[in-house]
Image (tube, rainbow, N blue to C red; front, side, top):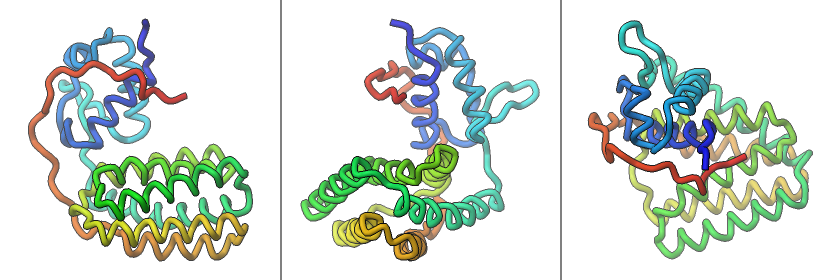
Length: 227
């Protein structure tokens, strides 16, 4: 089965965001092809996409490398996020469908259960799913794409200390309040709740990413492909 460039792109991006490939690391096509068990063609396409997203840069004599954002770029990222996420929540309150609301409520229920049970390792994926669904509920594909990319970059650039179960419970209580406002189609309330949520969740510091590439070979998990 031919593995698509989209699937490879997702795998490389995940490895960049998680720190497997640290900022400045060279991304050689041949090595990546071996790592993911694909040819160089989808790798080349994936790197072009990641460069357009800002995760990869091309250097003279070095080729593709993981981007190294400046402190100013990192600060700008949070400022942009603080402007767009409240807008997305307000739009979601105005445009959400019953299907969006069902998914959001289900995720809040799962998030609260995991937080109460101390299963905090599951909450990152649930949080990503929650925010992506909220972005999609805005009814704007352009805005949703921007919001998803912003969240990925925040996770990439910032490392937050491990969340305690009590803190996780508070986070998912806030998520639940946002969904309640969206359900009532209260755009201003949804916007205000997201503003408050971002202020409380703003990363306090930037932690250096690992300097070594781990797991030198990994087959692409095609079951994770989206779209």
